[in-house]
Amino acid sequence: MSIFEHMKKNKSRELLFFEEETLNLKAIIAVDSIILGPANASAKLFDYKNEDEAVADALDIAYYNSLRAALLRRSVGGASIVLLGNPNKVKSEMYFRALGVFLNRWNGKLFMSISKGVSYEDLNYVSRESKFILGKEESHGGLGKIYVNRAKGMIKGFKAIAKYKLKTNSLKGLKIVVQGVGDLGSELVKQLIEEEANIIITDKIYDRIKVIQDKVDDIKIEKPNKIYDVKCDIFCSCATERLISSENLKRIKAKVLTGGTNQALKNLKDVSILKENNVLYVPGYIINGGDIIQMANEKEGYGADKVETELNDIYKNTLDLIIESDEKNVVLCKLATQKAEEYVKNVSAIKMIR
Image 1 (cartoon, rainbow, N blue to C red):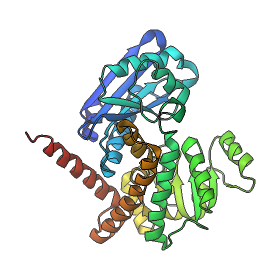
Image 2: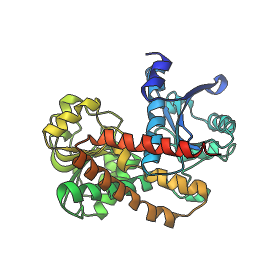
Image 3: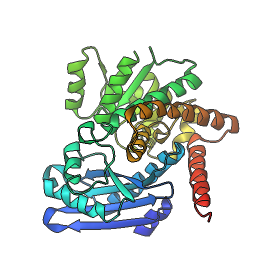
Image 4: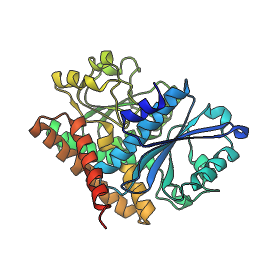
């Protein structure tokens, strides 16, 4: 697929390429929108099969960052920084400091935050050269690690889903599958334990499971290839984007499918399979915006208390969208996208007022 065909898919406006050969730094920057405000550019370092795959991922991340911010009515745009290479081979202090120098060229229209393959230590190197960073640790002037508030927001979303679909105001006793226990998944498990949920976890990387096992003796574990057969109330995918194939989707025995990932389904047309099986599909971008709330407040100079209060917006927003989707008989994914695009369009219109 050509670059312009990739961009046309999500109506993306801008795609840039940056390389510093001496540092093995290859970056793709996708800017979906800065209409709502300076863009949050999630930085992901991954060893892609090819450049075509990297371009598609960059555009997708930027698009969903826009969508998440618009759904929550935050003054943050959507962008991404995709870094190509093996994290174990290309990382260095100068690698990330060079990225910070490049970030400065945007003069505050683009702020970097971390994602897969980029650590807080890496982010601190970027900050040696650039102040345009969001989602910083408290020790570096931020409001804490972004996956903590992302998980908190997901808990709010779970409660809205449970109220509507499962007719309960609590997660206590609910059987919840967490597929993928990296930074976000493990934090979500921690918070679900506090909610007294009945949790089953899985991950292809045993070391991640071992970390949780060491803290929670009786945690229930299932093999990755068997997890789709587990009967549960909520199946939450926190692994990789678009992981669940049509074949595996048919095996799911949950009442609700959602995720920390933006889209759990490999093919969005498979929503019909879930509907036939009376499974409510709540795409992750509806409930996983806790980090957006944190970063919007961090950018505007507010504190953690305000973030904590505003995370409740995720509960209300999720419940309202599910109810409206049911009343209008409109697929939830489609309704959420329409709402987000309408909001961006309206903000764009008022900014044209002179």
